[in-house]
Length: 402
Image (cartoon, rainbow, N blue to C red):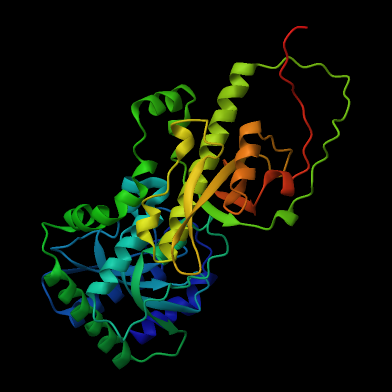
C-alpha cells in the first residue's frame, strides 16, 4: 500500500485531466489496486471496498471507502471507514466518517449542525484513544468553492493523518484493523433497524427540539412566507461569520440630492424587504442556538425564540440568553437589521425599538446582518441602548389636522 499511496501523493496534482480517464495509472490505483489490497487485509465478506476519483469530472479529493454492508454500501449515506486525500496531496487520512449527501438532502442549510451533533454522539460511543477526534484539514482554500471537501471535514468522526513518505506498510495495516475493530464495536451498539433510525430516534430527538423553529412555522406565518416567496429563498445553504463593525464605512445621514425621479413599486419593495428581514433573522436565530450549544447549554438553545414571527410589538426580533458570573441565565433581546448589500447602509429603527432598548440597556443587542442572500453571511453586533450607539435623525412625524 505504501508504494500506491505515495504514487497518488506524488503524481495526482501533476495530472491535467479534468475528466476521469480510466486508462490512467491514478484511476487504476484508486479504483482497483488499493481496494483489492485493502479487501485482502480486511478479509471479511460482510465488507465492501470501493475507490473513487470522481464521477465524470476528476475530484480534488480522491478516496477509498470500506463499508459494513449491514450499515451502508454507499459513500452518500451512513457510517463507514475511509482513506481520504488532502487537496494539496501533502498527506491523507484514515477516517471513520458519515455520508454527506444524506444530511444535504434531509437537512439543507442545517446539515452541518445535524452532522456535527450526530458525530458528537457517535464519538461518545467509541473507545478511540488511538485516533484523534479533532477536525481534519483537507487544505481547502475556500469552503464555498470546495463544498465537497468542507463536507468531508465536518462529517469525519475520528481520524489519523499520514504525511507523504512518512508511514509504513505495517503501520497502515495495523491502523486499518484498529479502525475496523472500532467500526465493528460501533455496529454492535446500534439498537436500531439502521442508520435512518439512528438519526431519527437519537439525533433528531435531541437536536430537532433545538432547531425545530427552522422547520416548522405556524400556519399564518407560512402563508406570509409563501406570499413573499421566502420558502424557496430560505433553504439556501449558508455559513455565518461575525466581523468587526469597523470593517464597514459609516454611511452619511445627509441625503444626496438627485434630479432623477423614480416611481417606487411599494408592493414589490415590501415583499423584498420582508424576504431580507426574515432571512437575516433566521441567520441570527441559528447563530444564537449554535453559540449556546458551544457554551454547553443546549437547554437554553431550545428556548431561543423568533418572537417577531408572532408579533411586531416586542421591540426586538429574537429572545436569546446569556450567562451571568454565577452561570444563571439572563435574557438577551436582539433586534436584527439586515441588508443584501456588501456595504453597511443606513439603518432604520422604530420608536418602539428605541424605547425597548432604553428599558433593557444591559441586555439589548443590535445584530447587523450583511449580504443576507450570500452563502457566507456576515454580521456584527452592538450591545446597549440604540440612542447610546447610533446617531439618530427623525424622518417622519405623526400628525393631525389643526
